[in-house]
Length: 170
Image (cartoon, rainbow, N blue to C red; front, top):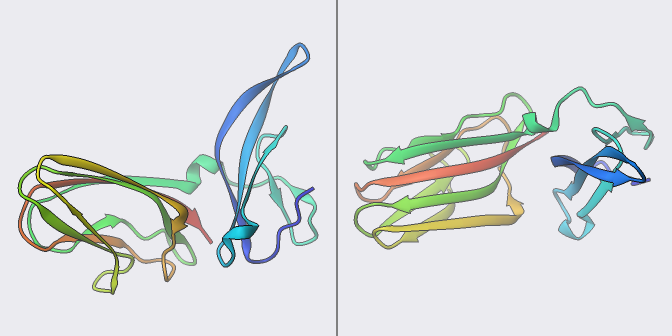
């Protein structure tokens, strides 16, 4: 049994089949993620469809499909206007970013990523013309406040394609 503190959360990025004797059983790969201390993060596999522990550490049946926790979006930027990259997840929902892929079509450019419209720069990406770059965030790039859009903005007009994958947290 895994004991989760109130600062720890989980998400299930995939289910797969494991052969157990002559039978195949669905197994959930569960990642326990601690927002405050990444050293408490771990990966576990369980012979159950979806795993969640309650306050008393008893196994519960979740009310959500783990695939519903993953969000993604693709945008094309051509101007310096701040543009929504990921729409807000709803009241009390954080959207932490797992990866960003960006393709710079024209000239070398700089891309500013913010976790709230008009807010402080969360990350600044640069790249040469005609290149594709991929960043995997491990640990996840945390959103500072719940229920906000992630945005992207170019420092100069250009042509940039951005794909982002995020994880819903509450």
